[in-house]
Image 1 (cartoon, rainbow, N blue to C red):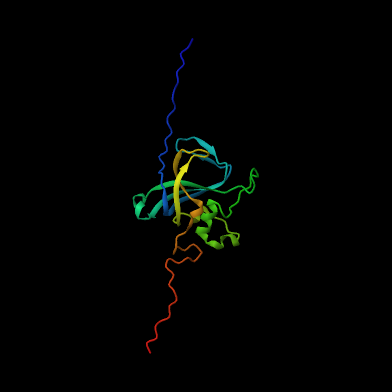
Image 2 (cartoon, rainbow, N blue to C red):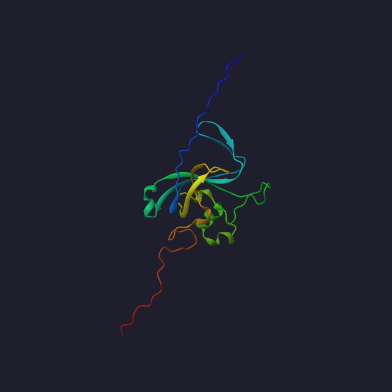
Length: 180
């Protein structure tokens, strides 16, 4: 009779930062669109096929409230998925109320949905927005695996040219005093 040896696999630990910031200014450093069916090669040489279209982004915290300043400069990767039009249909769309929809509105302005515009990955690098950052948990579980942008809180950074014409500090129209 042979000897049974139990070999433990390497423990997979995520090196992704875990942030919980109520309001952070986030900059897109890099963005790439990946379509369903695209084959991606990882750093270790292994490959996988993309199942859902998405824009994969490298994000960076560039400003926070006073209690989270130590996180400025932290970077992580996040995917903004296009949701299916109907479950199982294989057709995908950008729509309001989703994370990619919030990013689209912040980038192009609230009139984005009125036109036939498309969110382009090449329009995102250098774009800055404001959102809440929350710990990301593995799908269907409670294990924390990194950071995610809370899709309900994505909004344009005031004063940034994104087509929505949001002003940082709009000046009220106050009439000049009449000293006559």
